[in-house]
Image (cartoon, rainbow, N blue to C red; front, side, top):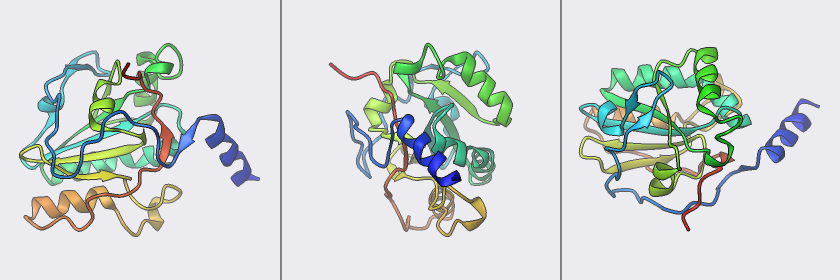
Length: 203
């Protein structure tokens, strides 16, 4: 019964294992629009440049209501701790333009951040500008850039959205560890799993 309910939630939310996207940064390509200021749940304006650290930055597309985000969001603070430990910045973007007046509003984002106790910047990608430029497809969808802003990983956070304790491949954590130790990234791309971004489409 639980599984049936979750499947219905997925269908209702427009979930996807690979959504439509209007841009597509490839591994090795440079980040763009890193100076664009976005409104954080704190009320401050923050850019990717502002949060990037010595070894790079994790950019994560997320949502307030996606069932997959709800499965993963309890691990977000741990990702921030891991990023800090490995000298990476972290910023989480809400790019769901088409639901901005409802469940993906800034006020709803503030409520979500308070509810979970987010310890990182959660910002509004107001017109899906960054999502469209990077090729963000789902919520969640992780992009990791190195110290020179080269894309070194894009894809899922790890290989088990149902259970953190059953993860066998912690993709995002592993990439940050690899880079902080000067090692080659073992896995540079995985299939994003989540709800499609309700983006503002480029005309």
